[in-house]
Structures are given as C-alpha cells and as structure tokens.
Length: 304
Image 1 (cartoon, rainbow, N blue to C red):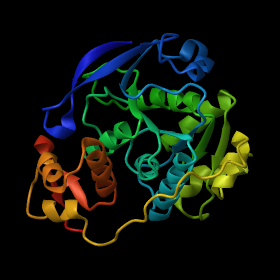
Image 2 (cartoon, one colour):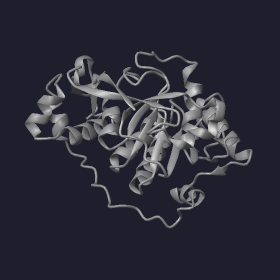
Image 3 (tube, rainbow, N blue to C red):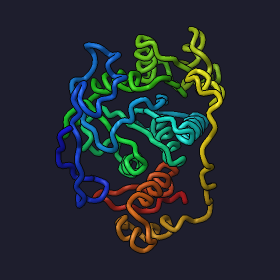
Image 4 (cartoon, rainbow, N blue to C red):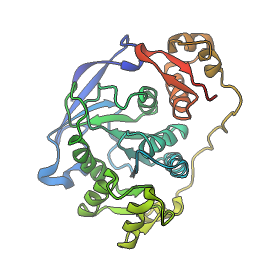
C-alpha cells in the first residue's frame, strides 16, 4: 500500500493523515471483492484501518428518506452486530446508512463506509463527525474513486456492487420502488449473497421495495437472530454491554450551546482524547444534538 497525504476536513484542515491506495490482489485487498470478477475495481482508496480478512461482514442499506422506525431498526441492528464483532458495511448516505454506521460506533465496533466520491470529499455535508467516529473505532471510509472526485449520480450504483461483495449478508431496512438499496440487493443476489428485508406497512412508500423483495422470496428480517442464523453464528454471544445513554445535557452539547466552538477547545476543557472525542461527536451529530459548521466548528442544535 502506498500513502497519499490527506487533509482531515473535520478539524478545519489542521490534521494530516494518510490515504492508502490498495491494489487488486495486493496487501490489504479484501479477498471477497474477487467474486466480482471483471467488475472488481482495480484500486481502492482507503482511509482508516485495514480490512480484517476473514471477519464476518453484514451490509445494511436502505432509503435516504427513511422513517423514524426504519432509522431505529438500522441503528439497533448496527449496534447489535458490531457488539458481536461483526463488521457493518454501508454506503455512508443519509438515512438508513448513517443510522447503521452510528449504531456500530455506539457499540464500539467496526464499520466500513463505501463512498461514491473521493474519500477526501466532505459528502454528505454534516457527516464529518460520523466519518471520524468510524475511523476512531477501527473502521474505514473506502472508495474506488480517486481523491478529489466529486459525487455523481452514476457513481452510486457502482459503489453498490462493492457493498454487496464485501458483505456476506445484505439487510435492506427500507426501500421505495426506485431506491438504490434495491440495486445493492440485485448485486448481492447475482453474487450469491444472502439477502434479508424488513417488512413494512403495505401502503408505506418506504416499504414498497422491501415488501416486494419478500414477495419474491427474500427472507424477512424480524430480529438479529435472523441475520446470525444466515451467517451460521446463531450461538454468537454479545460482547460487553455498552454504556446506557445519558439523556441529560451532554457536556459537549453544553459547551457548544454558547455558539460555534472548535472541537479542540471542547477536548481541552473536558480532557477527552482524539478517539473518544470523535466517537462522542459522531453520536451527538447523528442524534441531532450538535451540527457541524464550515471550518471544522460545531454548535449545539436547537433541539437538545
């Protein structure tokens, strides 16, 4: 793997890290991608910890315009899988993807995000903290598109084949009839991966795609045991319980409520290390209690 200098957008451009370029078949290359054959990428741009070969991995995908129920299910599934040492793979988009990644972070587990742009691009806006949380817990953000490549609608269907190939099981939480998550499910089917789909109300647009997958023979997702059985890990116990959420005013939120604040100031005042700070910011940003601003600043949202 060869390195390229990377400017960390989430800290106002002051921190430099390395983006690794992983060539097909070389060190750090996920062997599961070989199932794509000629459709496999020749090169991946990788920011974060290397892929752990042989680790069980589950893709969680779904709508960007998810319902509150769908977001809760994706977050819960990501948390429970990561708590059992299973890698959570998703596409880093708003909605179901972000909820799944955030759930894995909440459990202190590993999640890998496959992007439709360069890994140095701040997209989607507002996901800086989520990206830092992934990397802080041993995960990564990955793309076949070189640094500097802006998102394009044609990139995301290409990204979906990588999600499907790197996942041993794909779970579709919510998807309307035109959702890109169905593209991931089609790739998964073509590659021989198992697919599960969460059933939903018959008249809900967010569930039309998943309900049709179930009609066509996909196994319904009702609880984590469904996923573990497909993986052959039905007896896998959960790891140490995560710390219950504190629903009072978080000290980070309190510091950010006085106006735009730099995370380094928060870290200094609360005595937080970079890893813990990144995880806490990711969780607070996902829950809507803080938001990212230009220049790497944060502030408390109106909804505490």
